[in-house]
Amino acid sequence: MKRVIIIGGNGSGKTTFSLELAKYLKLPLIHLDRIYWKGNWEHLSNEEFDSAIMNELIKSEWIIDGNYKRTVEKRLQYCDTVFYFDFSSLACLYGSITRTIKNYGKKRFDMGGNCKDKFDLEFYRNIILFNKKYRKHYYEMLENCKDKEIIIFKNRKQVEDYLKKLNEN
Image (cartoon, rainbow, N blue to C red; front, side, top):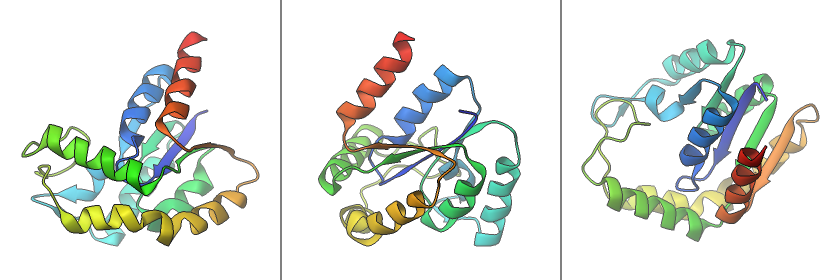
């Protein structure tokens, strides 16, 4: 594992996992939210974001944490390993609301700009609809990745077990 992408619904635990994986593999960790967001919930244009991602993809080693569905196919071309967090909508909603409560009014380390955590009903609505709208497409993309290692987590226990097994080695 030298070029890893971590994808899945908001609130599934991608960032928490990516921190542990980066520590274990000793690879640089890129949080897409740090690149995408600037100012106070303002974001880069698609062109600027694509260019910034490409600057990371051409490097020899990395872990990229973040969804941004529009850019997944490009990242799949460059990675050797994919972790897909295919959690239930309820589990993701719980994770996101828990994170918001913990960080409310604060800027998280994995966010760019001056984006402070807040309750956002539209954001939570998108979490609830994520699997219905995108799950099938994600699996179709992953099916076309014959030369990649694909690891799919269905729940937090599987993630926990995977990290535990890594740390035992």
